[in-house]
Length: 98
Image (cartoon, rainbow, N blue to C red; front, side, top):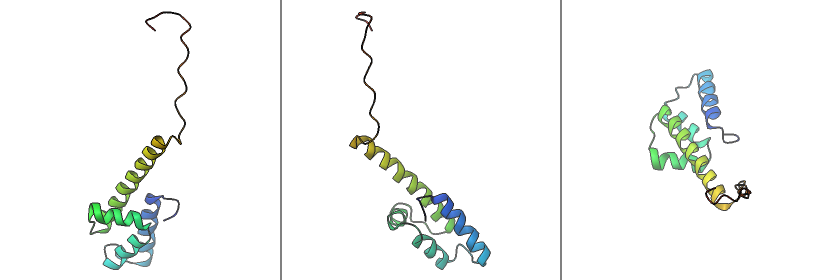
């Protein structure tokens, strides 16, 4: 799986399996599919989703990849490595209600 694009990985795997005449629900094909993704992604799929069929594996990979991206975004926000909010503009009207 290159560049974290799980949707492209799924589409490519399905296409190549079809070209080779391989049943994507065959246990060997599913093993190859899971081994082609980063270990941490496959591990999350197994631990949290327990997929059995190719369709279940594909869906689990998409869900877990989305979760990973969301978590990384939260980490960056907490670490302050994202752009911080600009300072509030100074009140120049001298109105105590603004």
